[in-house]
Amino acid sequence: MILLQVATALHGFAWGVYFAYTRRLFSEAYGAGYLALLTGLEWAAALLSVFFGYLRDRYRGPWPLYVGASGAVPFLALAVVDEPVELALLLSLSSAAWSAAWPAIVSGAADKYGSSASVYARWSIGSGIGWGLGSAASGFVASAWGVQGVVVSMIAPYIAAYCLFIYELGDVNQVGSSSSVSLSSLASLLRSMYL
Image (cartoon, rainbow, N blue to C red; front, side, top):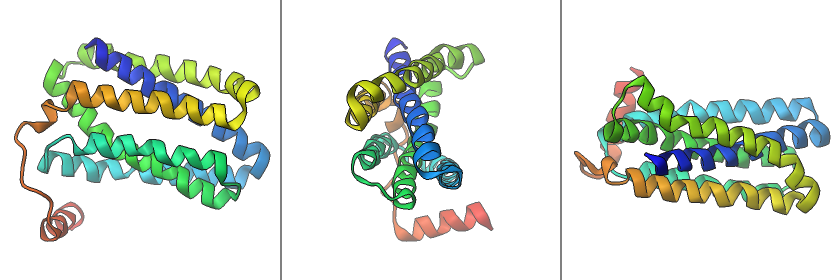
């Protein structure tokens, strides 16, 4: 379980740096309206976790963890995109990737370690610790190394976290593996979810 705790701490650290830095950037450089846009897009992307949770139950395998790991790529936009709407749209893709991975992480941890509240508390404590440290470190990193330092301090722990998630939970997510996703099965999934 220690690897899962470390992974959630690294993941929390990356998101803590991200949240603290982007809130300051958007509120100071672009204004409150663009901050509201970023927040709305992030929350809309997070709602995809319902869809991805359903897909994970139906089509098991470690694929959600790989989708989650891809969420590091949009963080690069902070270093190269100056237009606030484009930046908000790109950054929200990280939230969408998280939405794909988190149901598999939570259910994989429950499958491997049990689903009691105390088990959940023991492995998820890393998220809070990482988030707090990442949020605190964000300002120091930004003033010492600029946006490039912020991007590295988000991407490095984020990728490390997903490597640990894949190592720790990849085999659990293989249990009961189903066939590959087809267009007809996706259409039927959407119908069953929304009709």
